[in-house]
Length: 97
Image (cartoon, rainbow, N blue to C red; front, side, top):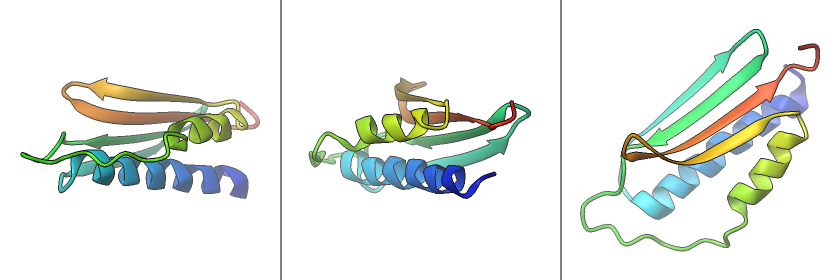
């Protein structure tokens, strides 16, 4: 993987975990990074908000900026609720795929 893709992978994980901490509090999160024939999948899911947690708002630009960054690598970023949890899924394509 080129260095720029590696940095983007780190940015996806960092932003997803920061959002989980901000919006769900003391929760569990799963991070999966899988190399495929077409590229790499980065999948981050939290376990939902902690009981009684009050979400903290952010600047509102994190996921939009991340979406642009992923798009630079011909990738896609999907975010939202998935099976009762919040999920951030980035699909980054290999340059030769």
